[in-house]
Length: 188
Image (cartoon, rainbow, N blue to C red; front, side, top):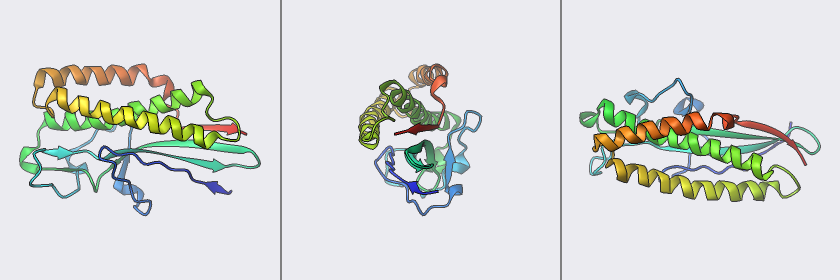
């Protein structure tokens, strides 16, 4: 099977994942697999004003399954090697906040799937350009949303606002369940 890879990796700080990294360095978003402090394997940035950093990302591929038949695959990843925390600052509240960052990646992954379906981007000879436009637009929105999340919660320190965001993100995950599908076969 011939494989065509058109991949865009998005991270909170635009730091791409290395394609050479083994799969165990990543966690793929799953509803019943929350982050644990042991998932933050990166070296803490001691001079950072932050207590932890989650490096998540989205990537997609197109597999060619025969003449004019492709499969679009989307992954929502968490990079264990690049995510870090300061052990002395670890708390349940901060971990929940970091989970929120990972959940936002999942929410935007679902939004991308929704947009692909609604715009019929996976059709016609220029499908890769259409997908790239949707991806780029969604990434810009994701970055803005991540910043808003941190600002409004003061990086988890504002307990009341953090709880409101926890509820908001949970509702967004529930509301977007129809777009969980991470693989779509299409013909051109």
